Image (cartoon, rainbow, N blue to C red; front, side, top):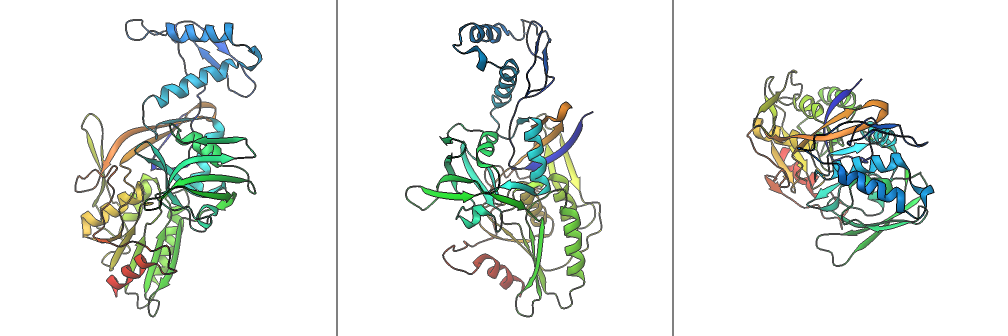
Length: 403
């Protein structure tokens, strides 16, 4: 049985090999202790594709490799599948083993062992989308927008650069048991040379929503949305009820900084609280030119409230959809610095035996028809946050807009 979920995110995912896929011109059954069984039985017309080279390399490895005990037939097949998916050239189209698929589920649930960063690509370079608030990575000085140029783990015996690395490979190295350490070599805009961050991994439980009341008289709701995951809607509903019960509230600062995204439906549902029913939130555009508009279906509980949205380089994907929908529909003021700029949608498919497949199926546009990929949301008011000061200059500027 297959399950499909639309996810639009830059997640800590890992790529893998697949079970049950078929390749080749001749039948072969591969068995291995640590891999599912794979049957090679599919016939492919020579007029469309010739797998002779595949089998030539297969035979050469079996006949010539100096240590036959190291050859795992299933691993060879799965490695070929991994290479096939990677050859698409899209870092967000990935195959996941059962273990790697489980890790992705942990990311969406917000519970895992690691350093607490979301990663993605800027061009071909591995980059930090955002460190989670209070995470080991943030405490070690890792910032949104940092480029990761090398990763080292002495305990794993790994030290490698990130040129040509995939998201799954990077995650496999960076993740590890609580108490262990990984070293990230970073480059940062405006800083000469490299920065090395030694990060001790911890068990991380990431909330979706944080709410506090700030400003003089605590009359401004600081509504921080950290991710779009499985528990986000309930946490959001609880926060909305608390906001509605607050007397004398002047307005809301919706803080999407360092929110890497998550489920597309979450962006649609949450935007509904600020918009009229039937408002367009996002437009999905396929390669054949077909478009589908996703609209709000719920009654907005926070409509007509003074609202300012905060974004930064760590705001990606679903958080950019939410910010774009608010700007295009109700001219919400956006403050901060340019967001990440991830403008594609992935279909997350659960395959047999626990493996998963993420495939980029479309690009998304704002209600005004703008594709933000690699450009991001450009704020109406650009304000940098000075990391050398204890103040949050961006948030303070947002409060001033309301008060």
